[in-house]
Length: 186
Image: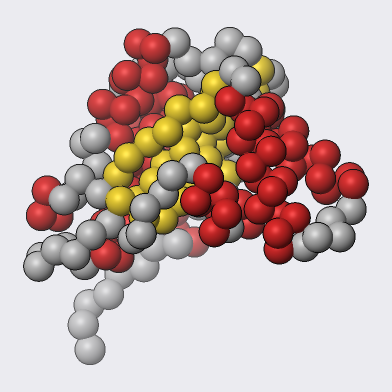
């Protein structure tokens, strides 16, 4: 698949099944992520791969965070959180590892980590895999971030779910002219 095809035709695939990406496919995704724009060569990203039984432990961590915020969480929501990581055989946690830098403000570092996440999605698509970038309340939950080992100054950019698409859902093609205009000055 060529680069323009990957960029134009990538879609989020919410329904994923085994098999997940191989070690070689993951390596390609991470090599792509490490090419994200990076002002000042800060390299403000890191990644956690969650697979197998660790998916269940991630579900338990998501539930722990939610219960700390809302102790009376309905049982249905509790079960949904426990099972959330099992929506795919592999989950990659993308972390923005920001730090003070004289040329690269933290916002640029956070955007760079977002670009790294997007590169993972594109590399998954180019290899015939399905992917879905998810956040939600768990991505901002202090207990979840602590449980995943995030340090001070780090932000959880998202959970990227990876696997084999179980069924495709065509995404509508957006019209460029609805989003692009020309600016000519005053």
